[in-house]
Image 1 (cartoon, rainbow, N blue to C red):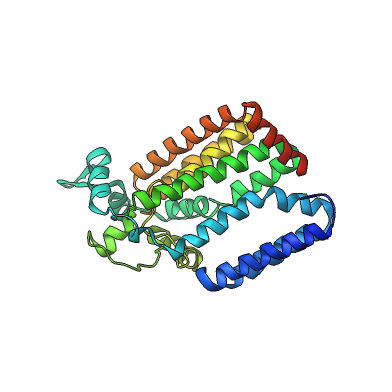
Image 2 (image 1 turned 60 degrees about the vertical axis):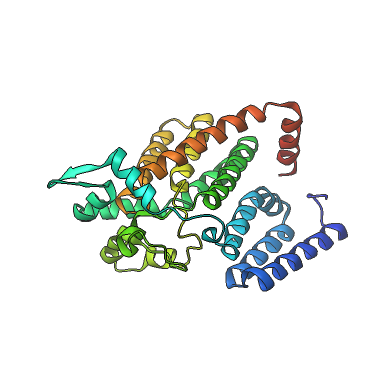
Length: 305
């Protein structure tokens, strides 16, 4: 496919992709307004101008990621494997338990009791930028360094893909689930903003309530992708030698990690597994990217954008 010109072949292929995507969502996933928006975004950017065409092709990796994530709702992970509720809770308490008033608490339980408005605001601000900052960093790399952008986007995709696979192998309930439902399995539970509800109350807007009401994967706390995204950003920020900006990326990473536990969305063990997974993927990818055949594929994609 010639990415640089408007051709009949491109028009036909794009038409087939749109029809296939619409059919998939209409008959399988469930057609929603955001699906139409994605189609308009793709077609508009692809045919508007050469620069916008290259941009949307470059970010097609992120589009594929979103399509896969959105499609996971058709087969919930609890229908594939046993859901783990008590086991993560007990492991968290055994490894990171806090002894308070003659009883052991998980860090999540501790922060549910001992929290402040300042930490509520800070945690909310960190958490709400979990996706925007990686995307903004991706835009920066696309403009400044397309090779590094390609590596960043592929690692981002692979980490998510492996994370999704683990969700189906080891479904795990988040900490807030235990608070509301205990250790019994309840099917069809909606997402919950948990400790982030305090941020919504402070700002007077249902920011996180609206976000988590649409969550398609409630029983998918391990590994924590909230732990992986800022780590990937920091790694490629260091590769790009961004200097003081990397200090901000490091603060962002630690802020997200703290907020994930503080808000009862993840156990510390979820973060640990996410970090280990991301580091393994990054190291393997960087090694693979130096292999001649794979390097040629990356160079071809870089040439197309």
